[in-house]
Length: 351
Image: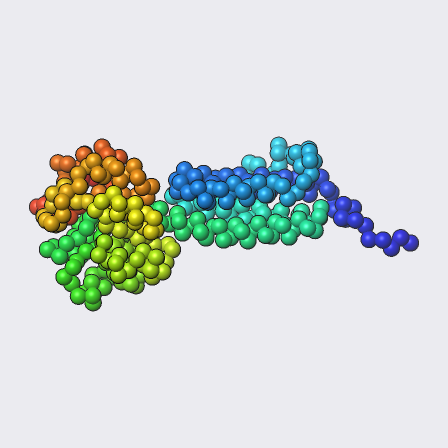
């Protein structure tokens, strides 16, 4: 009697079917990664993430080397799953949904590759496992970056002022369709500021709106705001790197800039967005010399991060801002000083 253990190929029920599984899941993983790569390349415009994903796609195709055999084993027209299309597959509400669905698709496919490739060569399983754990870490990093990107998906940005009731301003702004609001009050005590931030944060969450707290990253974190905004004077005490440790990677940090040099410096320091201004003369910053739209245009050409124009912007001059290519602009007086708050916001949103 022959006591020898048969090799892996003979233990397999059907090598052709195993090769089909490997071929299908390799394609599935690579296709999913390509979708994620396009998000990183064209939406986030992140070279590092794009390069990492491209490298992973190449690695997946190289682990199982069966020249011609995988393609020969393919039976796409006979695949029972080719006509299956679930309700969830046909619906994507936002960018994060596309990212999450495709990352899960990749991870599941790689798990299948890890298991079935062992029938061909036990070493393959270990290689695919390594890739799988790389994917887990990559998913986390890109998801945090994507979250910050989504929080910056706004046009009009309303900044509150102590001359008007902060909560009332927030309620009216949100009801009018504003997508971003900042709490700003240099006169309130920190306790008062926290209470205001807590109430506005709750309102913002109900409306799915980006809420930014001015000056205090600790308060922003405690009320779970979308981010914090820091002035130039704040940065001397609290550099962006320290604010990031307080806020965490999934939150955004904005920085006020008043020159091209400050804008470039803020980007290098790790800001998620900058405000640039005052663009026009404004009573909110009477001591600030207007930068004008030409400086704003230079800033837009010099930095890649989102730029929020601020200072003296109203329905009469907002078109000048948009002609520079700036998609985001913040207002205080143009809304808070208007008799019909809602109409003022609607006018700016439709400008």
